[in-house]
Image (cartoon, rainbow, N blue to C red; front, side, top):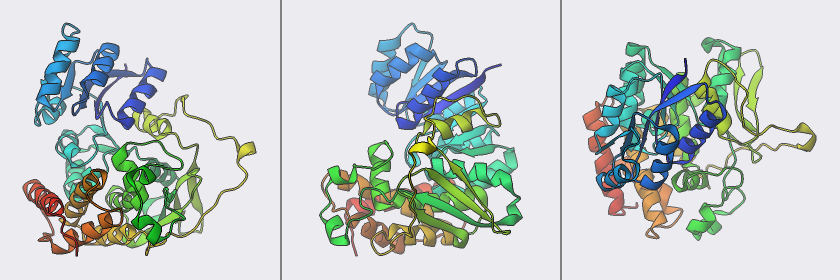
Length: 384
């Protein structure tokens, strides 16, 4: 029987790639639910192609436009902020692919985990913000979390080579982004166009800017701590500009196991969607005859202080993750609007993180309160 799939964030980069995977393996998947924010035109194309039972656009006006565009196609159109959780709770499925960028994807992702579903997790913010809640819910329900990010997928695959107690270190690789060789003074004058020139990956604007600041790697440190139950002190970042090795696991016997491949998001997405099987994929193949060399170097914490912050947040836990994530999301918005300099992103995040009222074991309501507070602080542009 085909695997029934709900895709949260279907109109974004990860969602579109997931549908490309399903297109390549049509007998394997039935798309029963699609959800996004406001892109009704792209959603209407997806609805016509996949004919899901339910399509959700959280923006009511966009949902109304979608309903007019696909009326009679046999797909119910839902809207509003609660529609994502409703989709998870009311539409039967086997896999939820969580690919909504930011904290907006947290409630629906948590609902999927609480239902005991298999979750392909591309929404790293769910674990960054609510790692303890997510892990406890998965333990209670029996839900399986399969990472979709290329780095965490690589770690997940590499961990099959040993037992948890045999792990010595987790090595997260990073391209270094567009500013890997820039001085701090050059970065101070960096434009939005500069930050959007990622050397190896094609991603959405928020994730691309996070790569430029290396906030994405800071978020991945926090995510890895929760996902793999490894202390932050044993999670390292290695700069690898070619993005061929997606991450590695070092074991106590001295072995290091790596997962390699072309930088093509269809590969980790398909791994999550077809797990535990490996099926013929459409992802690009690595040709060693054309791979002359690979480079590795340590990250520069002075130029990229986000990495230091990410480790600190992973160690601290509690509400530190939500304050860190919310401040970064809001700061990136201000940078994209031309109201904040590039280096001010990390400076602002650190200031908000330092001033927030820390709580060690927060519930969801507390997390959402801290999230709103941190965003408001950034909107007032408080920089130490």
